[in-house]
Image (cartoon, rainbow, N blue to C red; front, side):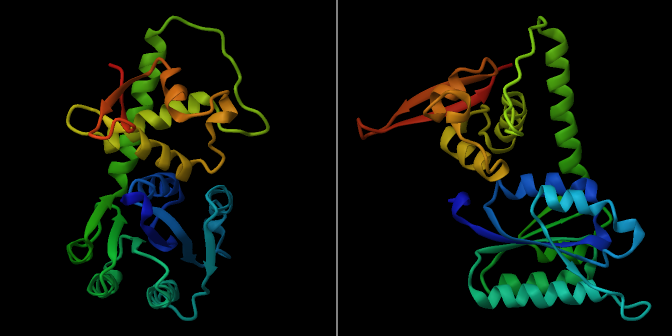
Amino acid sequence: MNEEKRIAVLIDADNVSDKYIRFIIDEISNHGTPTYKRIYGDFTRTQMTSWKQVLLNHSIIPVQQYAYTTGKNASDAALIIDAMDILYSQNVDGFCIVSSDSDFTKLAARLRESGMLVIGMGEKKTPKPFIAACERFKYLEVLASMADKSMAEKTEETKTTKAQPVVEDSKNGMTTKSQLVETIRTIINEVSDEDGWAYLGEIGSILNKRYPDFDTRNYGFTKLTPFMSSMKNFEVRSVKTSNPNITLKYVRNKK
């Protein structure tokens, strides 16, 4: 099962913009649980100051690497050393290497030789050898554009819906129900079958990874099924199994 995979997420800050971090973490939650979240770079440089709040928001550990000499990338070496240390610790099932740099091609190939799932993420300028060395590769621009598209569809839906009084459902920074609706719609688009149906248990697992504070009791429900049924944005379907005591629940976005 995807939710059982433990993934080490290692990010090359010199080759990734901070604007992509949310999309990276969200995408990884579709494949497993990020047990390591580290980013490598020289954060003493003024152009890296924008990273601070992003790293705090997503609980990513910065690994400071000074540039020891011109033309040499100490961050790449530190990332590779950490990756091998994590590999030998046998604490993970896979790696996500985030970079548009071909320097990690050999690392990706070596990790796969050890039976690791290797997911690469980078911009469209990423060299083909690094892409080929990964089991899966995600383009950051595509992840961002898909999220923007989902947001645009949500905005259009709001415009065509009769205005309703705004009910504030957040308490002390708790994730709002409106935020959850938007995220659930995106998750369904990402993991559903060709007819648009997604397994409710998988959606709940991904929600818990994206929002550590997610609990249906925060919104007045003891279980996930009635919580989903309470929202007008989704259809919920029950499928009987050979075991009369087990019924599978599926959900899809309403059109």
